[in-house]
Image (tube, rainbow, N blue to C red; front, side, top):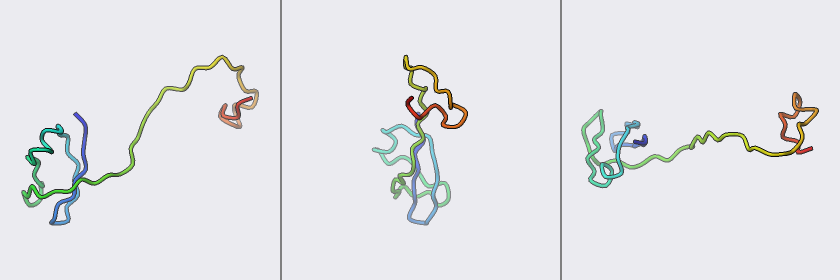
Length: 71
């Protein structure tokens, strides 16, 4: 299950693991005041990806450019 960020009318912002059905049913409550009147907060998304596999030769300056120079 993914985590979602919410902001309550009382000003409390919190993060909770929930199903989309929980959000649609408005069954998530503010841990501070108990209200279900919440709005979603959208922030940065972190994505971790494996490095691309290529047949390109290794960069001789990898220690400088991080192998991003596309030699």
